[in-house]
Image (tube, rainbow, N blue to C red; front, side, top):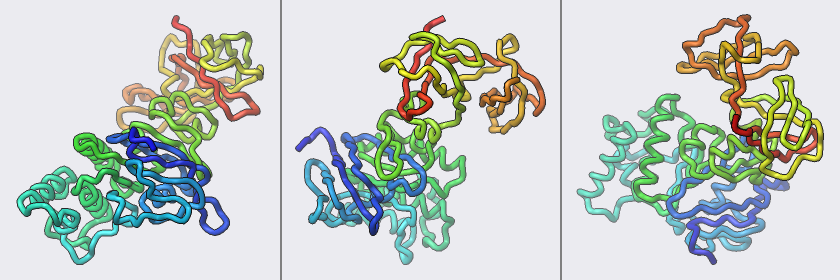
Length: 362
């Protein structure tokens, strides 16, 4: 048994009827780390969280917390004995208790003055100071979600499990609160596992991210590497925006596309196929009046500081490009762009395993 990891999920399988909701799932979380399981609805991430919490039996595998086996086939340590904090989508607030009492529910053994101080501090950081005397039914869904977060954080659990903790919040509050929760967890050294379908939440909160599909993890890495070095088409499609551009390998270091030759070095063994698909992200395509690539604006999406443009090449191929919003072009305008690529992800046409190409310095 390892003491290096606070949480060890070892090859677990969970079923709902005949369906395998989780299938051979494995990952580990070090003390004080923030881990995110990211994937679409139905991929098994919430079932995995329920298994860690003790609400879901295992058909196979084992879950250990601080080297203690808490779940395996035929053995299920009750949730209340796992010393785990939980924030689930239904909030599960006590309807008969005010906000302050809900947050203090897990602090019964603290001295009254310390309990009040803890509750007051959390309510302030969650933007709930003015709502302490209200009951849950008097709160909006987003406010209830923040109360549930504060209640889970109050006892400083050794492990915190969060299921879509920011899903009911408006965009500005979600972004602010995600950063605030990240800082709180790091400040108190709390190990956390969050599941979400939103890559922004996962990237802001997660030290490591596991991309899930059909009950298992396709890629486990840092947010940066998951975005820039996806190992499958599913991950590339699910994370961020981008398009696949057809190209032909003309040498060990060169891929020829309609945008020209791209020279680079393969970080992995050379591809066997000559024809490949190259992933181009919006941040790879930059506006440049002197750029070699001419395109027509076919769609635009204003995002405040930036504008996402869909650009159509003369061949009909489309690219995505993120321009600063002061570069305000209209649909139908012709623009010039250039590639600013320090790496490319190249996929064989008949394979889902990616090869990462890093561009050579100019």
